[in-house]
Length: 150
Image (cartoon, rainbow, N blue to C red):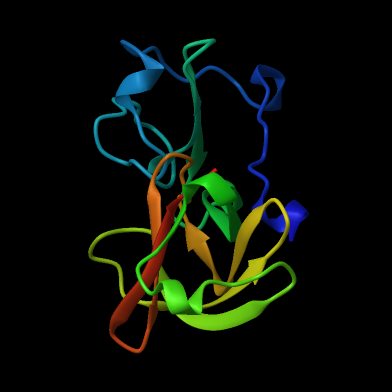
């Protein structure tokens, strides 16, 4: 699960420079609009940003593998249970529905509690899982918990 939830680290040598921008902090993973780069067979999408080096990494097409991950991690400090009676203990699992975006349809997922935090694995890989954003999990239509993605 740790491997599935880790974000891929891109290096400048992994690709080529295709344009310039006014600051990596203005872009988010999955963003398509506003890149001001054309001439590619498929639209470019932001697949990662590095604000320390002011680099954004793009990939061609909405199905680019750099956009998708099958799992994410939330530290214990960032896990919030609405239904405290359902709080998991280390090594417990729970099948839920989860979403990583406000209007996203609920997705089949499994919670895996560890000593260090909560892994959430999705049945289907999810696009643009972004550190610092929220994930929320539900049983049927009831929100039972949420957390900040690490």
